[in-house]
Length: 210
Image (cartoon, rainbow, N blue to C red):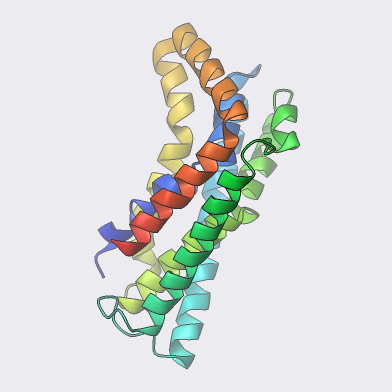
């Protein structure tokens, strides 16, 4: 399998509370140390998560023939279509409840985080987020269908970490101007969390179907 096909999924991995956490950390005191702790957690969680999901997909593939990814009727494609249906339902739910949806309360407590807490958040925003679990499972299914190995997922893992690091890289590059911009982005996403969730679902649906 061409590992490049799963690369776009890395962008979706960090959209939502994940990138919000990264933005909050770069506007906090000791931003660099705290952000590095967060990135370490993201790196470990993504690597472990992809490894586990690839193993699950391989075990399932040994029991059931997933078929070729180009076959619309293959078991692998049916699994992906089921994921699309779930994502579409989630997007619709976010639209219906958009007036009452608020960002997770724990996001507001991140400003005072130390590197250790940021590390734990990096782990949790990957390993406990349903959207990221689905993405990593999709990566595993893609690899299993194409006969690929875990090594082919390494560019996906690297890109996920790079996306997570973007707020820190921007802050280091543009100093004070970037910090002010990050605060505005943080405030906007806090009040439009429902829209961010819908965008995540739509992007993920497109990436699965392409």
